[in-house]
Length: 173
Image (tube, rainbow, N blue to C red):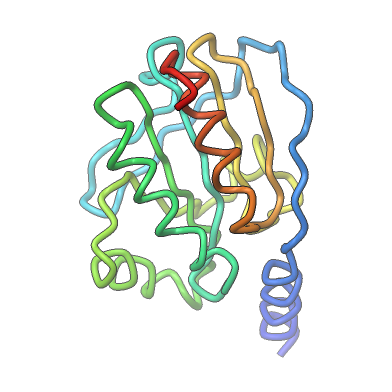
């Protein structure tokens, strides 16, 4: 009973994450590394992308409606900019009660970016200690955190795309 109440409380907290804030850049080039399995069983290791690609970590959950609204934006950015060096890693915060829903949801919508489940909460502890969702961390090619965004607002998508283009060294058009 207590576990169920905690799960419900967590779900309510996560789905409430609708505000947004672009946090300050980090100058730390020693970001905590992680390796997780994607939905196809392949390894996704952060350090293999740092200092080579712009990395977007997106924390979400299947029961989070703002997260679901953000997913098509992630897919669009992935489709447009993966070839130019954008690596989107979507990190599911789903617990044991909802983890089985992650893969069917991703496949149903045809998302092609990397998706991992943070089973031991290690990735969240390193990058999203409040387990907020949606929560986005944008890391530049230099391995430094450039932006953190709590929540999802469709009005902020053009700025996010400009940020991604700028970090990729593409023109602002």
